[in-house]
Image 1 (cartoon, rainbow, N blue to C red):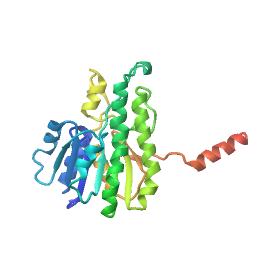
Image 2: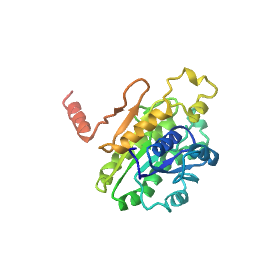
Image 3: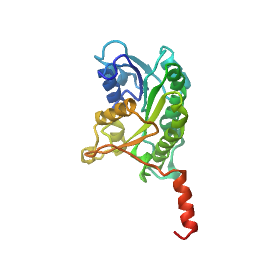
Image 4: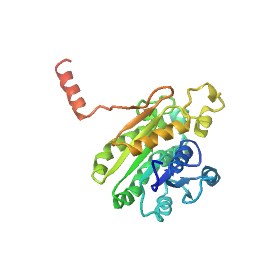
Length: 253
């Protein structure tokens, strides 16, 4: 088993990708600290998983939740920062402020506060791996939901920007960027449409990619997960590309 004796943490573990990741980590021998707002969902995720696992009910946007999740851990090897919500696909001038705040809380604060909380524990243990759930919308803007796109591009940008500084402490951080995944969030977002007609990806497929990122060499990767195609690490332009573009434009190129 690849994670025998390891300590792991998964947010949004009450369903979907988080549930699949928590179960995969446990099956690979790790102890799992599972976080979600849904206590019943957490209980279902961890049902039959055996001893050594913990359920923490709370919001990933609440620093107190992170304190409770980590206060019993003297070591953390892998953190899967997965909690998220779909956002709002209506007209931007009709965006409810409570929906906006809830989306930022889960999709952005849940990652930033999560990294802030787990890094000291990983550093003290000699290193670790963080994988944040973004989306293909973190790579290519999704016009159907600009607020969701905002949060997921924030995640991919944050991951790429913070990766070099964490590498010095032996901590990797990557983003998994799946397409449309067969989760309760997708069903809710479909608003009554037949989700069976969509190119759905199984959450277990995404969980496998999360584990691969966490256990392989590299950092700052944004790995797109597509149905019926191999995952691909997306290459973003860098400062040198921007400088060349400006130079080319100045030369009429």
